[in-house]
Amino acid sequence: MLSTVLTRAALPLLAAGLLLGGCAKPSAPPPAAGPRTAAPDAGAPHAGPPGSHAGPHAGPPAADRAGLPGVGPRTSELVPDGTDQAFVVRGRSTNSSESTATLYERDEERVWRAVAGPWPARNALKGWTDEHWAGDHRSPIGVFGLTDAGGRLPDPGTKLPYHQSEEFVAIGTGFRGESLRGSFDYVVAINYNRESGLTPLDERRPMGWDRGGGVWIHVDHDGPTQGCVSLGLDRMADLLRLLDPDKRPVVVMGDSVSLAR
Image (cartoon, rainbow, N blue to C red):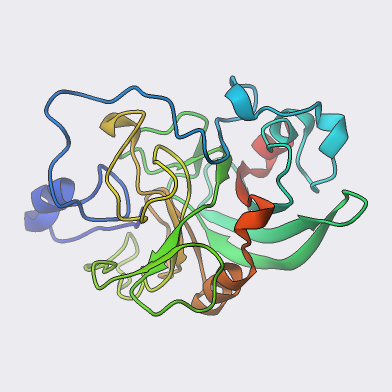
């Protein structure tokens, strides 16, 4: 979800070219039959904001897996049982585009320990939201699986499925006039409104196209995103090498007040 602000003449093309506020450029327009309403893929951790219905991934009581710093009981309930890796992206405030990101893993005693970070990160231009919609320029709050990766550059050594393609290309400039070039050199798909086990470029939107999609962790372009999380190039390579599908990694993302719920 890059902050793609092009020339005025290019805006109509931009609206048609992005995945309704997402990162990738679709090969076809949204289905004419209307939004799809199927539930998110059950094969990967996916949950809504704290306080929402967490579905089959709610897991055991929060007390059984408490310990992520700054993460409150309602947010902790969304972390699936069996998840041993959590990438916590904590926004400065509800309306801020600046965040910090830390990767945690459970130790043998089931206590969360930081293994990387904190790293500087960015999120959407207008901050965060419990109910993300296409084009709202806010990042979705919640807990989402991290199952698929890709990018324009070769695989840096990740254990996740990795799709290298020249289609991972970003053009134009961002909200601050910065170049978007290289933003998709590395990406990790966030399992918000997508089906796991597929390339990040896949266009399926289980909750419908109006709920946005193409929410990724990608390379920082020195400006806010449209809804994604961004990290420096080296930090993206580090994250890709550290994420382990056997640990059922998730991203826990939102502003600090929301995550503390």
